[in-house]
Image 1 (cartoon, rainbow, N blue to C red):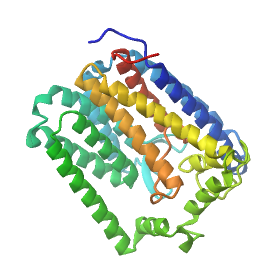
Image 2 (image 1 turned 135 degrees about the vertical axis):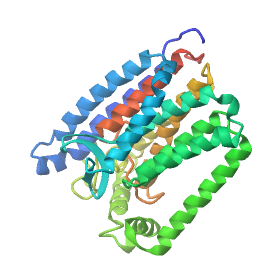
Image 3 (image 1 turned 60 degrees about the vertical axis):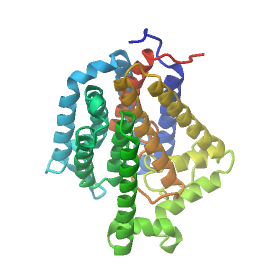
Image 4 (image 1 turned 120 degrees about the vertical axis):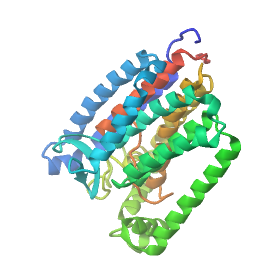
Length: 373
């Protein structure tokens, strides 16, 4: 192992800045809704402050534990994540907005097992690859087991239903397996097959014209065709972004958050950022994510061993894909799907998992030779 270094300061600062922006924007975007519906305009602010505190302690804890020590718990993490995903599909699962994605006690203390699955899969896959790296060139011994794991995770999460999270997890595992030593020919073949399968599924859903998935694709192609129903979210998001201009309306002065844009503190929080803080604010958030991803890639490329490389790759892929999907949905660059913006959207379990995962990357950075000037 390389001589221990200080943790990557640039990565740490970028995460803290995103979390701070998230706290401010969750409060700004949710105040009107919670004041009217919960008689407490500070409802989401108080909760996100608690979760941010928990996430900070979690990130600090994971940054102090040597990343290779998690290998001891890899199998346990995988089993627990599968058990939790199965439990969601039983009467224990909590349903909100026609989707059953949560476990917990009532509606006050809940978490999403799919978020736990992301974290567990990073530990399990990176550990597994580090133990059998010499077999990664073989399709049957090296690649096929991970395809089966991907299929298991995808099926359990898709059944909730939550296609976007299932997609993120599959892309994340695929990236980890590729970095872990997959043959280029296997990568090209599987990527092509995956793209063809995804395209066929979307075309089939669109041609069927049935269900909410077909309506989302239709509204993406022409949101103005049904502006009061399927196209409503996209139109309100575009109005928010468009009226923000260069410098925005001003912090707290959004119009669309006042019961026009659904879930302004969650899936469409980027639209509120663009409306209140303008192009400058939106680009600042994107730039912070670019810095975070750049530092994560650099840590992965310079990691002292394959386990650290694959772990960092999994974490950064998870964040990068979710950022792209969330912003693409807010800007009507892809069909609407529920995907929070990492570190910024409201969501306790999501924030804690993301900060914990960054803690692992920070620990890897301590054992990595980086330019820290």
